[in-house]
Image 1 (tube, rainbow, N blue to C red):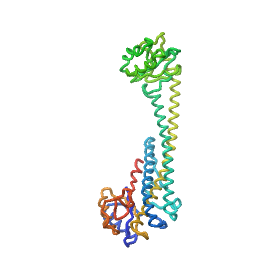
Image 2 (cartoon, one colour):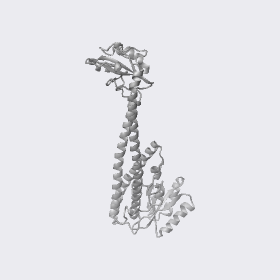
Image 3 (cartoon, rainbow, N blue to C red):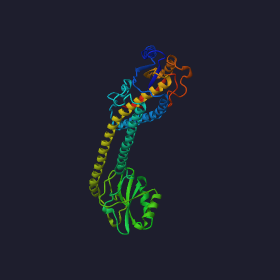
Length: 410
């Protein structure tokens, strides 16, 4: 956590104020580490009325910009966690904390002589574009992840969620004008219940037509032959009894599943005496399983490619939004300091890193030694001020910069 503050000069020079600050907070007490924060001397002030309008705009824009910084950082953290990647982020060639401590105004990107309103507009426009691109890229990547998860669940999950199309071999299929074959996914614990009940779940179910098609550790898939005209009523009754009914799909191109497939072992055989050997199922399944494996590997490769591209974009964009955020806060510090202390500029901008255990004492010290301008009108730690936006009101202008919130997990 950092504080960006402007301390009133109260007739002293900036160098004297800096020396006093160092003496009271660093040399005598371990209250904070301090860094000089240089603002351009060429900022155009304009009128006080324009600064008041600018101050209101800055509150809203600053909140939006900081949220974008958090979003980019959070997305980068998620990607690096999933890739087990520890790539550092950089802001204009420096680590974010170093960049903040050594901040210098980027004159090439944001000319200090142009109106502050234009500078703020340029920063806001850049951040808005990054926010828009982030939404699009994260949505695209999220859709790919969802597709990957759905495909994996469908083809490698338990039989209860897998796609069973093509699972049924031709020898166990009846598919005529009047008759059809369905698949029933039955919990392993209720297989005996299925074999007892399936013939009575509807009229026109072919007796002894159900046999094991596939099984895994939790579920067993049975086929069942029945007349087409009773399919709907059969499905309704079966589901009410706790059995999941699925269409068998086209015969022929079936896949190996679960812990192996078995046909009719110890169970009723389909009518007509047809049975299917495990060799037939395994042989047909090898090609389909290989095809599904290739499809999964292709999805994984595409997702890795998109993920790497998104990570690279986040690394670049984070430096952009972080820099914009600090420049925006610098403008905000300047505007609020002019409104607080008046013209010509009569303040010393300083970056402070408080000792977390000494924050209360540090605030009191600053109020006592640097509260000469209207200090009697401010209560320590009370009110809102410093430009609004939830900042506490002090006899000096202060903004908090929570760098840890954006720069963790690297």
